[in-house]
Length: 108
Image 1 (cartoon, rainbow, N blue to C red):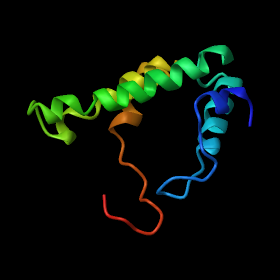
Image 2: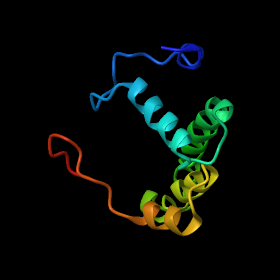
Image 3: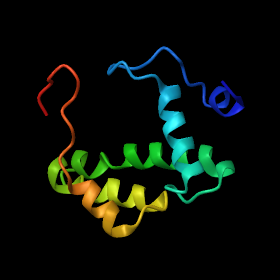
């Protein structure tokens, strides 16, 4: 792995879904290289930090009693996708679409 992976201490061991964090980096890098995500390659680590922080912060309205997860959740991925440079209408549609079933048939 390159310095970007090492600086964020991503483990190649995988996560609970069996997905390797390095694979997710490849997805980000592919999105940047293809122009899907309109950020400079040098901004990738900052964007990952923004996405991680935004994801954690998205929990606060629910924890503070301002609504259920289903009520407050759709705006967060919409805004994060828009921050990556995805078209606003597409970001909105993706954020409100049903998630695919997890491997192993786990209920959503």
